[in-house]
Image (cartoon, rainbow, N blue to C red; front, side, top):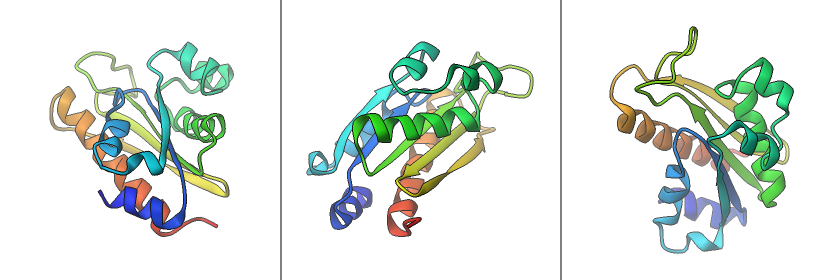
Length: 156
């Protein structure tokens, strides 16, 4: 995987914070030999309590914007980076279905974020085709692409 090589070249470490992907991003990274040189760990935070207590997502953010939001994705990435001591972190939170949709947040709504010491970005995706597994796999692929972009073209 190009990501592990890119992180190794830069001397950076990685952490993950996942909800809808259930550890899929971390699994994809650790499928690569040598990932232990760059991957510190990850948190699978399905419950809001875990998002708040372990990742430090403000409860006000969860109450106001919800678990599936740009604000929560950003706070998850920042929390993972800070709490695990990584150079870069990625997060994913969304509704993989088939249930869980709410007005304004249909199945396939996903937010992903990348946090670095000097900023980062959030991406909103709405996967309109496929079942739960397809939505999760698309999210994992896109999160890894976002990470590669951030490592290739750092924000600082």
